[in-house]
Length: 373
Image 1 (cartoon, rainbow, N blue to C red):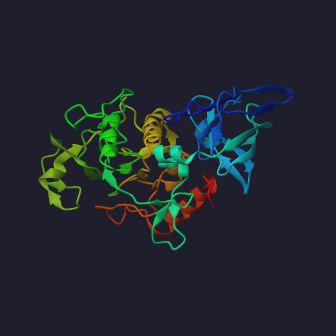
Image 2 (image 1 turned 135 degrees about the vertical axis):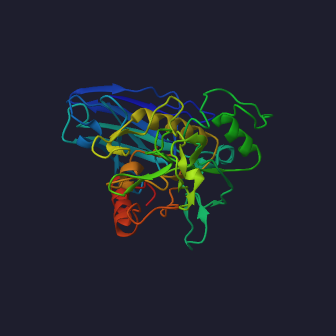
Image 3 (image 1 turned 180 degrees about the vertical axis):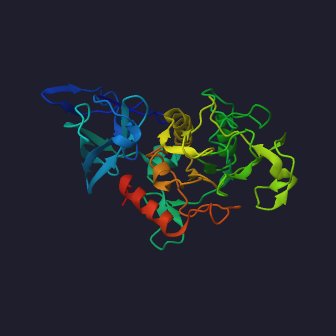
């Protein structure tokens, strides 16, 4: 097991405390303090072998601290790696202990402690995310940070910002940058930040979108619509008029869909062997979500609170549980998830709303509990 901390803009942070594994113990580096609302990441390596690491194993830590006691679930990050992310919501002493189902010797009976301190007011001014997670004000009419500071969202729309269309370059940008061809993700964040923006809207994944031989919107052999994507103009794959993204008959509907992979060509899920043209939501690709995670981390450093949709328009049969995708999304960043989705056009056979959707959202709140409630 190893424990590491992410970097904030002005501090290099290390997880400080004692971790125990059976009779062995070790002390991690303590070069810097840990602050409240500062995301910590615990990495576990499971020792058993599983057919599907994503569906067959659950990993968690039980976290306790000042006025806080919750179980925080982790996620599979590829190979035999599981990670749990957590934050301290108040200054003071914090303790965690790990577990898994089924029990795995690489996870069970590990524990640690750390001490969290408050940010200074100057540090909070440098990055408002240090004020804590955004939530509704007591009157329910506006938003505020955890410390009560009002949060007024000023956001831009980058729906495809999670994909290669706005690539993360891991390279420095310039304060004098002006948008143009070849713009990178960091360039766009920096440009909008200098204009006073503090949020962007993105769609986390486009599971069934691909530039292939099918129209952007099409149904399978049973008449079930499996995709309702944006058109890739100029790439005509059908001779007759089809259905465009707004649901009407249009020549545009004969174009194939836009490719929505990440910068490295990764799809978020493997394609289903049972349902042609539909993603297998039990077979995720961690590399896609690692690409998204880099962007989420960067926005957090820059003080942004993104509005992140899970998916838009299509999931395809048998319908993707939103709780499944929410459990994959980057955790412990200051992020807003819309409870209601966006729908431009979906047929009656296509839509997944109402009671099933609410049930999935409730399940997600159980599997990924908010540390602020």
